[in-house]
Each structure stands twice: as C-alpha cells, then as structure tokens.
Amino acid sequence: MDRKTAMKTRIIDNQLLDSVGRKASASDRKRANLNFHQLPDPAQRFLNAIEPDSYIRPHRHIDPLKDEAFLVLKGRGAVIIFSDRGEIEEIIELDISKGRWGVDIPGGIYHTIVSLASGTVFYEVKPGPYDPTSDKGFAVWAPHEQTEDAVLYLQWLIEQIGQTGISS
Image (cartoon, rainbow, N blue to C red):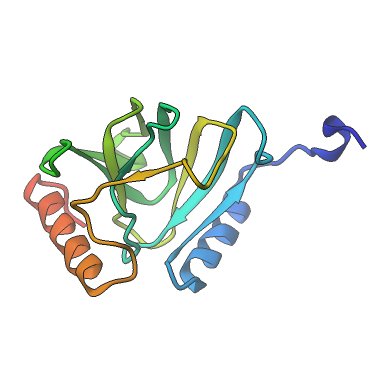
C-alpha cells in the first residue's frame, strides 16, 4: 500500500479536540499528541493537548535548526521565550477570544508553552523528519520533567505570566 492509500482525511473539530483533551487529562504528564504525520515525513503536524499542570521543559530545536509554529485551537496558553541563560525575554499569550491565534518561533530559540485553561489544544507544525534523539535541545538551566523542581519552576512561570497582565 502506498502512502496516499494509507492516509485519510482528518477533520479537526470539537469532537477530535475533546478526545485528545481527555487523553491529556488522563495522562501522567497531563498532555497528549495526536500526530497527522508519519515519522519520516518532511513536516511534523499534530495536535498537542496540554493541561495547566503540565510542565514542558524549555528547549530549542538546533540539530538541525527548525522553526516551530503553535496555533491555539481551544483554550488558552502562553509561549515563553528565553535567553540562552534562561532569562524570560517574552511572554506571548495565545487566546482565541482575544484574537491571538498563534506564534512562529525561529529555530534555535529557547521556549516553552504553558496551558492556562483545562482542555487547551494547540496545532503544532515544525520541519521533519522526527528524530527523538535530536528533536529537542533541552535547557541545562531548566529542571527535568516530573521532578519537584519542575513543579516549582512551572508555578514560577505561571506567576511570571500573571505579572504580564495575563490572568489564568
């Protein structure tokens, strides 16, 4: 079977967003992906459901250099851009109700995304193919996921978002 035969059209609707959102809520990491791409595809396209208590370690895409785009489809979030030393340089609110749909992040820039509402789902796109050994270069100054330090760091990030006037 060739690729065209194996692929099917996917409709992105409330039912699909709710489904991936429920998977995120039920997962230990409080997030879930639904991939539209195959691993060797030249573009990674997927839904990324993230709950407010999910910590995504700041990272960048440098091997190879990859731009990345986030579009909010449901809920609210904030993308945080960091300097190479870990200082917050920018907080970008993504909120459909405010007409803030998305952000395009140049490759090589440290960033994370924080969910600000339960049931939040993003559409994410970046160049492929996906290689888990080199996809993300994690920030050495940020705590590892699923640690007590990560919980505290996420709380601090949310406080910083609140100080910019973005209420959660």
